[in-house]
Amino acid sequence: MARRGGPVDHERGRLRHELGAAPTLAGLVRCLVVPYAALVHQQGGRSYLRIVAQLRGQFAAWRIESDATTTKHLAAILDELEMAADHPPAIAAERIVALIMLLTGTVAERARRIDDGSANELDHEAFVANLIAMCAAMISA
Image (cartoon, rainbow, N blue to C red; front, side):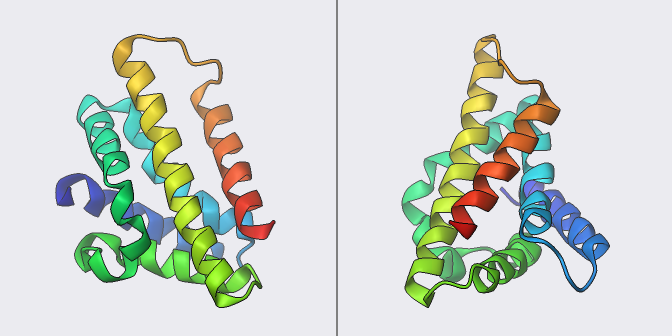
């Protein structure tokens, strides 16, 4: 998990830094999605994506159970999204968990389809853009 998660988190931090002091909601979500979805291009990355999706029962405890060495930027971005949502704390927290589930499940399904040799209707760029839009909409709804 650390072998794949560490580089993804590092890239998330780099992308977040590029956004500066006033990021948009979609910009923050992009920081989460782009590095994570890029793992579908590697066989080992696809295995990682599918394993993470199997851990969905633990997503509600992400703040407590995350490995700080591989989720530092993930946690910071999720905190920013939670605050940007402008919802009561309990609703904002629920939406963050739902975002994590949507992100991990959707990318894992794409990885599964690639591994199975099934066709994907969207190319990678369209898939990522759609996933960013869906995740941002979930937070802002």
